[in-house]
Length: 206
Length: 206
DNA sequence: CCTACCGATCGGTAGG
DNA sequence: CCTACCGATCGGTAGG
Image (tube, rainbow over all chains, first blue to last red; front, side, top):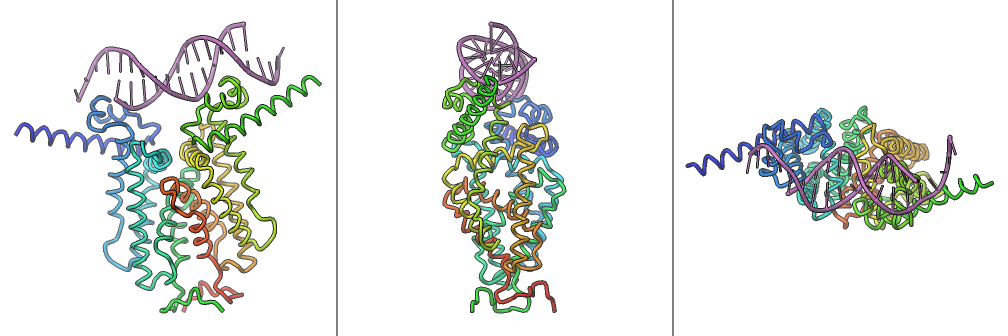
């Protein structure tokens, strides 16, 4: 009973810290979000925070993972695969423009966690695999439905899509007037199947 | 005379430090390239190094600027614009795969210098403007030569190209088996004008 | 889970 | 008043 209550309390506190961290980072960015700052906002000591998360980098990884989990809500459940992908991704990047601090955190963690010994390395590496697979799957479905060119390689295009989204976010942090959604739509448009071509004619040479 | 010799000596030492820093960073990456490490390799004290460059971040910006200047050598001087662009960029990313530390530095500086007060901010911001303009210019030329779709917006595609290259480099740092050149070629291929279409038919709707 | 604090590192600087 | 340094060390930070 007591143990249960303590576990529940611990998990609740961890969740509370996570929500506070999401808010603080989204507002102040990773540079403004020190362990002391987040701890104070969550009504806990820096040491107490370190009890729930092993290190600052692990806290940041948890923040990004929570954001990843939340971002699935932008994906429409029904409709053609290409429409779902386009609408979902544009809604996502439009939302990202409202939480610049989180975008900044994402870009910085990706840039720093490439060493296998980095606390956020596993998160970043696994995220790449997962997101690339999701993009490639959606693109393959759109090809099967005839909305994307039949000769499009879903694996290659999936990697390009992820790379482009990452790069656009970095670019946007330097130029807030950049319309990430419009650029993303333009990319997807360039993979569209030619109009009135049920059987793809691409790749046919003379 | 004496003054001249001293100026020349200072410039020469600065250049020597820059070359040493390029080598050290390319090998050890930005995390392994401390001021003390670079200074030692250049046979100078940390303070002496700081005399030539205002700060570590300015040194890193100078390293990246030197690399940018050097990277123009991969661009072919003659030929159709699309071929020059494709060959130049693929040669560049293939070379990048040999200096992973510099790629890492590039990604990290871009991720950290978004604040206007950062020592490398001006470098990063201006680089984006310059590189985007160069890409857009090359793409516009390729459109004019009929090798890319007539309805392609060179500004949008230029931004996409830069974003994709940045994103691919970040991805490659996590997955060295990623073929950046092949992915880049695939992107450019998707913008190709339809075969046998002197007057572009894209955008024509029924 | 807190107060109090350390051990280490590193960028940058003051004096000469 | 300038350039080109060096030996020594400080101030601030951050994780823990």
